[in-house]
Length: 204
Image (tube, rainbow, N blue to C red):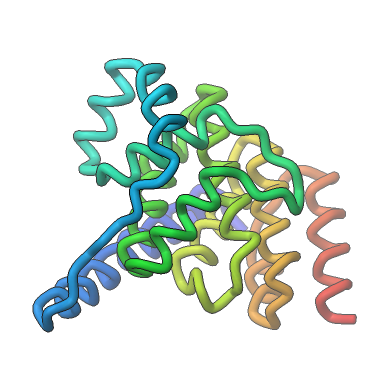
């Protein structure tokens, strides 16, 4: 499978997912529901926000990242991720998810889309952070945004991002994960072995 074409297809899926979620949110708000985000971890976030470069701030504003997305990005830039271990950003995102599921999913969708092609270490860490936290959530709770992000990440140039993408499908252990993993074009032999091991485990 051609990686470039594959990435383009997933980009389209991301955009469509965002639009669908926004339509659902608009309908929900029109019916009297309100978007409320939990503003936790303020001290940690305030400190980390000061470390943003002006270019990053400008990019986030241009992409219309929400205030919550701005704070979440600041947290993920500095975190260290370990398999199975929760981070402050994950706790914060869980709060967002409980209050407004579609809004929270669109938030990480926009962050991921903004930084997907970035090579800066901190921005790559943001991608890993998103994959790390959605891998700990139930398959249905992040559907369809989480699955689309993980599929896109399988083709990322950074091997660690790819690894965390596979971990998402491994942790979700859903029957649909096998088809998604089989459909992706993977260049790294090590990653291909990992993917094959996961597929074998899910099919076993």
